Amino acid sequence: READAWARRFEAAQTRDGHMVEVAANLGNTAHAEDAVERGAEGVGLLRTEFLFMAHSSAPDLSTQTAEYRQALDALNGRPLVARTLDVGGDKPLPYWPVPQEDNPFLGLRGIRLALTEPEVLETQLRALLMAAAPVAGASARPLRIMLPMVKDVAEFRAAKAIFDRLLADIPANGRASDVQLGVMIEIPSSALLAPSLAAEVDFFSIGTNDLTQYTLAIDRGHPELSAQADGLHPAVLRLIQMTVEAAHAKGKWVGVCGELASDSAAIPVLVGLGVDELSVSARQIPLVKARLREFDLADAQASAQLALAQATSIDVRDALEAR
Ligand code: PEP
Ligand code: MG
Image (tube, rainbow, N blue to C red; front, side, top):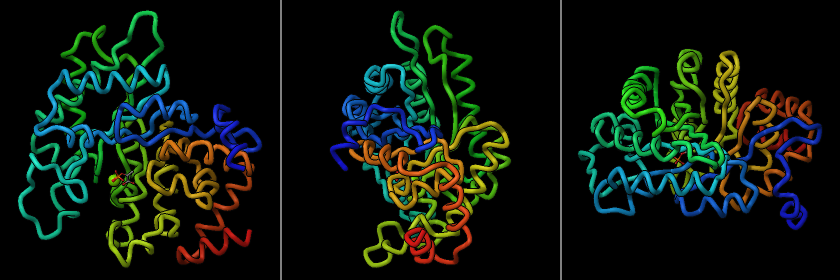
């Protein structure tokens, strides 16, 4: 089965009846983009840029960042790059950006909240991304999707978008991305509940099921005893995903999933049945995720999603899907 999945890794990702779902790679390092393409990635669905910041003893400057992002876009050769802006705090400390001592760092200064306290860092990163994706004469298009982490409501999105819009006005059009979207991660329950208001303003959503599950179930994603119960197939999380997809599609926006749930073979039909447009997974899982998609039809997936939503616990969801 693995050998067959590998042999078919460059085929378009689709269900047995031809419903297309983009399968992209989660990357922590731009140098791995080429390898992801070699494994069948149709793009990068999550570039965790904090790893670039962790590799330096202070925030990397504009030219360092531009060169890094350019490397990923070159390797992708026309495939989209979803780059997440710096997501520090909580489980992702950055030594030279000390966050004040907090009793609950997971509920403290992190993600976009922290980024907005030092807007120059965010601005430099956005500028580097926009410049890296500038068209290259004679080469493929360079689709860039910029994604903001840990957004809880539209106010935080607007604050970041104001910086983004200023840069668009400031950088000459021939020196920056021509195909660019600005979206948010949906990884806090409030943003899923308020997805209709966000969907009206963002270009896309990508659901971070790792944090969304942690915050919905109030279970630390890294807890030594409890993390096994932090299952993204919990019906409460699935309802939030459903709300997110419905709100996005009502406004003509696309939705990805970039948390661990996207590569869970029981979850894949459920996510597709809920209408998710893109699955972003670790590069080595890409052939297997494409193979899993080829095993079912869209109607099966929709039935699996309804079955899962009707359950009361994550164990019930897994049992019901298994029995099906
Ligand atoms: C998530 O929260 O699901 C996610 C993809 O982001 P990270 O794992 O980097 O927090
Ligand atoms: Mg997250």
